[in-house]
Length: 346
Image (cartoon, rainbow, N blue to C red):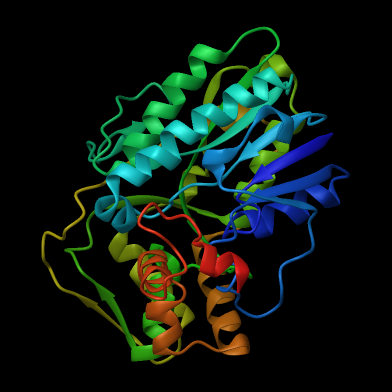
């Protein structure tokens, strides 16, 4: 198939695009390249691309495309909290316009990158399946709920949206992010010798490696229509539900000579949820998670050492909010998070 991947130059997209290409698909990217200078180690693979803000996509951009994999978003809770208006404009409104344009261009399948964070603060004694109540607590999670609702209204016999609710992502990428729990804890352990948990360690998080996310999207892309049409699917594995204190212990095992420090505070983030992943096994039998948190933590430690990581890059380049604020301060982004004329001509 000819597959358009939005956000192909981002953290997940730079890993997913090669996975889709290796499976024989003709991949074209669409990205505003906000994070093109956030490279860690090897350069990202070359993908033919449309350089365009998601908010400016038109049906003509999707002519001849068989399927859309929609990853592009402001994908960080601190960014959403600081810029809720732009989060909704990009993550919600632009995503729905993208889907409408895809449908107008006769794209048959639309894979939407949703999130298990829509479950919010939940009963830790329960495993949450796709029918569980949604309780989003951030602008980012709210935007995911709204897009799922609006895509459902577009579904028909010619247009198949699929809502892939990813567990909390982790893992090394050539377009690195360090504001994700596993990536952050490994980096802090390497740089400071301490695995610092700013809570009592009891909240639950489901985890998934970005390579496994990529394989799940590939399986959904190639699955029979009846298996995925207008379906929400949690993406992850039952064995990868962890309490934060367990994640910290895994990181400590991966990074020699570090210690775990749990502050015991209630923490600023109220989310806690354990997720049921039985449906993905039923609907997408081709998918099987290959990574564990322990393997991912070891991979991150090795890549951080191989390619280098210092305090400045950790805090200012590989975290989404500081990076976007830096682009603004340099006059390269405007208040609406669009490239300025100075950035385009430089």
